[in-house]
Amino acid sequence: MPNFNAGSQIPISQLEYLERTIDERRIADGMAAIHNLYNEVLPNLSPRLGNASRFLADLTIFVDTGYGGVGNLQHAFGHFGQVERSTVSAEDLAYYRFALAVYSFLTGKAALAKECMWRAIEEMGDDKAGAFFRNLALFYQARMARKSGAYEAAEDKTREAEQMAESRSKPLLAAVIRSTRAWVLWEKGDPQAQTILNDCRRVLEPTDDEAGKIAITSMLGRIARRRGMYPESVVYADEVVCRADAFCPEHPSYPRYLINAAAAKRLLAREIERELEREIDEEQQVRGNVRHFLNQHKMFVVKSGDAAYAEIAEAPGVQKFLAYHTAWKTRQEQQTARSRCRAEIAALRNETERLLAKAREIESTLPNHHGLGLVDFYTGLLRLDQQRPLEALACGKSALEAGVRCRNPVLRARAFVLQCLAAKACADENLASELYPGYY
View 1 (cartoon, helix red, strand yellow):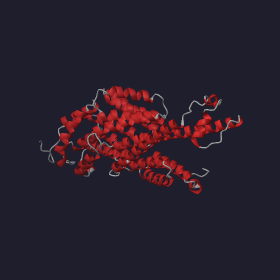
View 2 (cartoon, one colour; view 1 turned 180 degrees about the horizontal axis):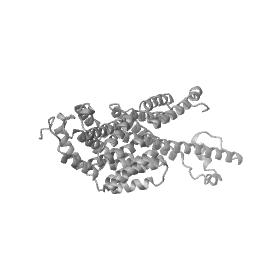
View 3 (cartoon, helix red, strand yellow; view 1 turned 60 degrees about the vertical axis):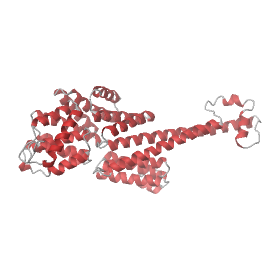
View 4 (tube, one colour; view 1 turned 90 degrees about the vertical axis):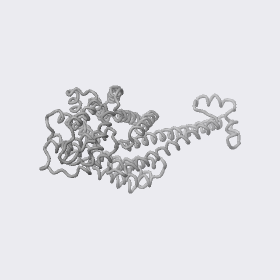
């Protein structure tokens, strides 16, 4: 094992190899290499170790692609310590700022991530390594902008990053970047987004970039969900969680995948419930129409219960009327079908609860208010479905506080809407009017 003491240096050739595996999406090879290097370097990782800042920058990229979780970064930054500008070169400072920007992004510190990445790009060198990190920096800037809802800026940055990857002859990296641009285009309502995502999925399929492929599948599932294709979105979400479980449950995006799966299952349960409610309303209307028909024709039999109804339904002339109601079912068929629907709804909601609880458990260990805010938001929607509006209101308040703390306008807007819906469900006109003047 190499002796990496203060004053020695990490071989440039090892770092260049790590960066090539990122460019070429040979993630498994890169992870094996960085795992060995991480264990060798960590005990003596500090600014005094040569090329340590560049290693730290590479490490943050690999954590984002599935090498362990942010715990690896916490340990690395803990060993590395504080950096004094006067004691390191401009190049090392740029690498350090890049690393700190990615670490901050992965842990939900949006403002610090944005500032550090901007400075890193400004200070990055013009050599081959500088081009690699500037390309990745543009990609991370695009992701930061998308996450904050700045879609125009995100699209511009993805195009710039994609063009740079292509100019460097890195088509697989360009495909990863293009998948983020597709998601931004979807947010803007561009119908070509799904086609682009499917193309990116095809390009990356031969690679072992599992994190990239999982992310694309997750995006496709969210698109299906927003289009109201809830069964399809659940299939995508289940695939994502299953693959993420097997690949890297410590990945920073893993709790978000759990939240997405919970959101899809909640909506599918709501769709089944609405269809059940619609069918019950339709049946009541049919029964009312039948009674009206029978009354008009003086055929009403004075009896009670289902037996009477069944007898009436068999009366001469009634079958002709019922033929117009194609959804007609016997009472037994109705009870069986409805019991099955209610069981499915209960199972989906139980699974939603489990996924959100698991996501909350993970997010509570991370310095990331945004993740906990999302859990609160989707838990609140579930409470509304369960007709528990006071709990939904509490969830909305918690989600809003999280949105304020992480300065995320999208989360704040969602939390505000949830509070309005909960206040309306509580029949609290004063509270609803306070939240949204003119609501009533």
